[in-house]
Length: 278
Ligand SMILES: Nc1ncnc2c1ncn2[C@@H]1O[C@H](COP(=O)(O)OP(=O)(O)O)[C@@H](O)[C@H]1O
Ligand SMILES: [Mg+2]
Image (cartoon, rainbow, N blue to C red; front, side, top):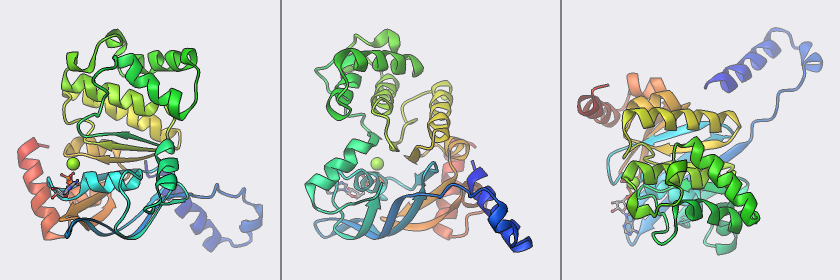
């Protein structure tokens, strides 16, 4: 997962070692910044759910956000896909400046896929319709095109045989997978996953991990909120630890998980280690 950054370092080193090679080398593809947040704040009344967060995410990166319940993880994701307007600070996502302007945030939501913590499936639509409807609305696919894509994606997440069911007839883990299928079907440039493995067993976690890896391979940028540290280690390039809406520590996943520097990160990771025995 660090291929991109080590490749970049390699190029820089080559330039230092042999500057005459600059002309001869095939240029590296430009890295595109997909998310740029500066002192991003989201207040609910006087309460700062997200407080002065700085974040840069490049295209194709997988960034995992960890932190205790109430630390602002879901609020941050909702800002990133334009569901919430920042109260203060700067936020650019996919080249769109996220402000209180509804139109720009709507444009952003069409290019982001989000899997919510509580899935947000439409209760009165079948699984198949739940996955098709966004494709019809966002991608303007015909009914038959949407259906074909829906069935293929449901198959990919192991939910094809449940296509005709209503969400209430599914377990939490099954609803989770339908929500993931729905997000993937719109070909998002940025995929935001809020605790995608919270309701699934270890076998399904592995499946979701593979899906995330596959998605990131195709240069989609992924931001995942999770409490599942083994999942974070397997899936992420980078880890961000939030506490009370603020970034306490961030860096390469193993640096933060195995060698946390800040006492708050150390306490959080120690507790998570005891709780989930990893
Ligand atoms: N719509 C809202 N109105 C008021 N307070 C909210 C709202 N959404 C979240 N909060 C508060 O903001 C804080 C961060 O919430 P959240 O982002 O959901 O945390 P996390 O996902 O890390 O558990 C919490 O204290 C929560 O109660
Ligand atoms: Mg949350």
